[in-house]
Length: 319
Image (tube, rainbow, N blue to C red; front, top):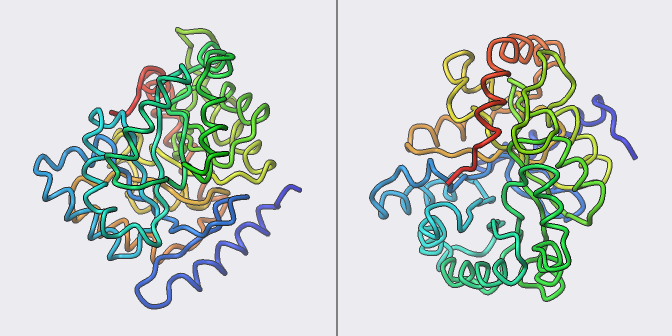
């Protein structure tokens, strides 16, 4: 069943009003998982690794949890296990009430299982809430994922064995490939590049060409509707386009734009405590952005940035 924008915005307002009481952050239900998570997720990718001192990174994550964030996003690929090790130091004592997501980038099932078993050790847990296939690239990559010895079958096995409660897939660069993956397979959650500059490459093998300005191929227009129709949890990432659109609009507005889409949460890397505090405040006081304001903001930013950003994200994997 499709949800109208009016119904969705009404639900957002109601959820925000409840979540903003006290020191809590607003929460939303993560699609068909039924789990409630904070609308702001703590990203443990390259920005988390900017805390060169491990103690400082652990302090930042603890502060995020103290301020009400309940969704933690990491991956083996973030520093080849360094991020997971840091997160594990916190999860060792603060696992309860935290929705923990990690990712495997291997395309062969056996390799993915070995990586994931190592992830559990680094995270100091016996299961994660969500395991993603990390960074779908294009249709050729999807074929490798779907192969008889590919990672997809292994993720189903991991979910069946309850080593991960839910499974998902992430994509930075090809909305059409992600749309196809979501239509074909039984994912609980997906994570995609969503920002006001409408990032998203046109479909094609390897050297993809950028969309024409104003073209329809963006994650927001192509992949997001499929995820919504299948009642998946949706996590928006690349809110600030790796800082490439910061300064062109207030950071608060960029985050508010994505949170006004039909998504569960926005995952943000916060390499300084002041960034964490600012984003917490935006989430805590969130109100949906009017559609006209969203269209104006995305029109301005896409016109200025989309071609360059599409080229950039065609080869980008956060590490």
